[in-house]
View (cartoon, chains in turn blue, purple):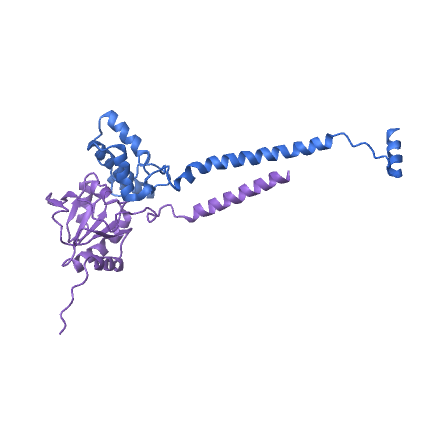
Length: 156
Length: 181
């Protein structure tokens, strides 16, 4: 009964975001809209671009990208449009400048650091094994009497 | 063996810290989205009145403070705040103009929604949400407070209540000094 009520409500369209009729651009321009849309963060999703999300907010922003492309704006002008409103938060990939370099270079440093640590860890046991396999030092001339007798017993 | 355990322990602690920080955040919170237009001139807009089809532009509103309330018929929290916004329009309508702006909706659904409640202020139709995105909305409901010089003084994200509305209206249109007896 509950399912039937929910299905009816959805069919009436009162509780579902409405899909507005969108005027698509020619294929080449539409591809550019989608490519640009993949660069901007959907404001109400987690880690999704406005091209990947079907939320009303993402749809509104993608429509605006479409309008800006239709107006003849360049990619940089469109990026500036969103950054001037939502800050760099709007970009899924932060600009490679200033403190942002940490974001770009951080993973590389972590990778190098991790590789170095792993290499050192792997080399460690080898060194100790090699040390263990090294021939024993010749017995000193004045060896302990007890040890000398033990060695003799063992050699027999 | 001991060093492997240390590395594993370090990785586990790092993951725990990352997850702890991540789960502390509210994924639905819109307040984290920066809003850079506060204190700046409102972008120009040209839309139409939902009921009459008459054009409404930012140029026409120059010189008077106004409130823009973005809403949609499919938005539950918008239903919650309607009473507060209507109260604001009736209480402060003499010094501030109130407008509803339909967001990502169909005219049919928006008009039907308006028949179910008393609305004393004009509703604007923004067909492709250009006005909404120009104003840097992040969804609905959101309410903008624009002063007489066209500066965006504040934006309220989420369902607004009477107290917040009264305070923010006061920021764009201070109460007139009453003549003392």
